[in-house]
Length: 270
Image (cartoon, rainbow, N blue to C red; front, top):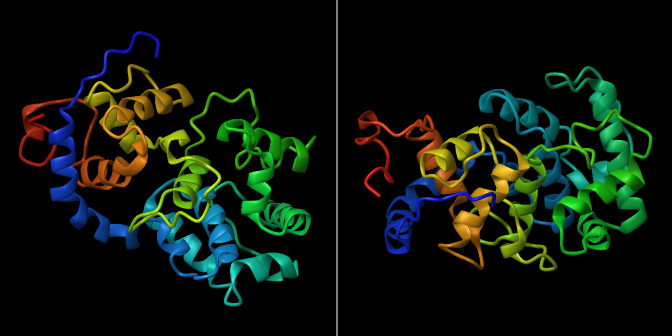
């Protein structure tokens, strides 16, 4: 990956820290947008809830979690039934940052079309997926948003160098299976996922030498993912939640190694 020289943390050390610290970190799942996915038991509801929760997971966590709580309060019947019914009156006056009411309605209209065409989000993604999740998102955009730029923030253009963090987070939830991720999609190999690169994972990756990119980008996400494959080739994203919440947020990683990190960072010594 561009001559990157990643710091290779010994596998035993990284896994030991993950096993020791991970359980306490996992208990923070209620502070993460994936908690909205766990509210539902039907796969169709979980898929819709997951995509919506992931797409609005940006900005301050307490703010977007509050917005999502208000949005999902409109879906007592279940997200899938809400989308199929196609009645958006409850969205009036609802907005989040620069996504206004019209943008929300347009997003739900697209979801309505997808479910009508394919039966479920999972069936839709399966039909567009050919081994590359990034290209699958581009194909979805071509079919459902051709000539419409209003939802570019949710469905990025192929020319974008962005990390597609929110899509990659949604895919992690759907593909992996543990106490956090629900793993209901079996047509994508966990080894083929890309890490959801937020500012916390980017800083941790920089500090550990897993990426040399100066800004968060898709290339940085791939470099960090490839570095994590050294520790778990079949499931590199198993460390993601722990690194984000336990090190990035919990230890306040700044991306720069210093003596002040010693007492609060579990991976400092390695």
